[in-house]
Length: 62
Image (cartoon, rainbow, N blue to C red; front, side, top):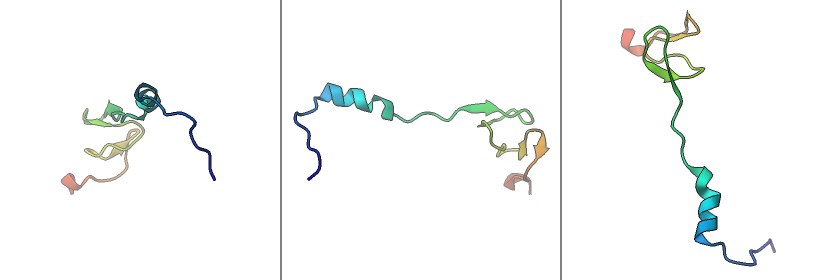
Protein backbone atom coordinates (compact mmCIF):
# COMPACT_ATOMS: atom_id res chain seq x y z
CA UNK A 1 0.00 0.00 0.00
CA UNK A 2 1.19 3.49 -0.79
CA UNK A 3 1.64 6.42 1.53
CA UNK A 4 -1.55 8.00 2.85
CA UNK A 5 -1.97 11.50 4.29
CA UNK A 6 -2.27 11.62 8.07
CA UNK A 7 -4.28 14.84 8.12
CA UNK A 8 -6.50 16.76 5.74
CA UNK A 9 -4.85 19.55 3.76
CA UNK A 10 -6.67 22.84 4.36
CA UNK A 11 -7.94 24.97 1.49
CA UNK A 12 -5.42 27.72 2.20
CA UNK A 13 -2.46 25.31 2.21
CA UNK A 14 -3.79 23.67 -0.94
CA UNK A 15 -4.08 27.12 -2.56
CA UNK A 16 -0.53 28.01 -1.52
CA UNK A 17 0.74 24.90 -3.27
CA UNK A 18 -1.30 25.57 -6.40
CA UNK A 19 -0.35 29.25 -6.61
CA UNK A 20 2.42 28.39 -9.08
CA UNK A 21 0.18 26.35 -11.38
CA UNK A 22 -1.21 29.37 -13.21
CA UNK A 23 -0.76 29.83 -16.95
CA UNK A 24 1.82 32.33 -18.12
CA UNK A 25 1.33 34.65 -21.07
CA UNK A 26 3.77 34.15 -23.96
CA UNK A 27 6.61 36.66 -23.95
CA UNK A 28 6.31 38.55 -27.23
CA UNK A 29 9.02 40.69 -28.82
CA UNK A 30 8.76 43.07 -31.77
CA UNK A 31 10.13 41.72 -35.05
CA UNK A 32 13.02 43.90 -36.27
CA UNK A 33 11.83 43.58 -39.89
CA UNK A 34 8.04 44.06 -39.79
CA UNK A 35 7.67 45.33 -36.17
CA UNK A 36 4.83 42.87 -35.47
CA UNK A 37 4.81 40.79 -32.26
CA UNK A 38 6.48 37.38 -32.38
CA UNK A 39 7.78 34.82 -29.87
CA UNK A 40 11.36 35.33 -28.74
CA UNK A 41 13.90 32.97 -30.37
CA UNK A 42 11.35 32.00 -33.06
CA UNK A 43 10.98 32.94 -36.70
CA UNK A 44 8.45 35.69 -37.36
CA UNK A 45 5.20 34.17 -38.68
CA UNK A 46 4.33 37.39 -40.55
CA UNK A 47 7.49 38.03 -42.58
CA UNK A 48 9.34 34.69 -42.19
CA UNK A 49 12.68 36.08 -41.00
CA UNK A 50 14.88 35.00 -38.11
CA UNK A 51 18.07 36.81 -37.06
CA UNK A 52 18.12 38.86 -40.27
CA UNK A 53 17.71 35.89 -42.66
CA UNK A 54 14.68 34.81 -44.65
CA UNK A 55 13.88 31.37 -43.19
CA UNK A 56 10.58 30.61 -44.92
CA UNK A 57 8.01 32.31 -47.12
CA UNK A 58 4.78 32.99 -45.20
CA UNK A 59 1.52 31.64 -46.61
CA UNK A 60 0.03 35.12 -47.07
CA UNK A 61 2.90 36.12 -49.42
CA UNK A 62 2.87 32.98 -51.61
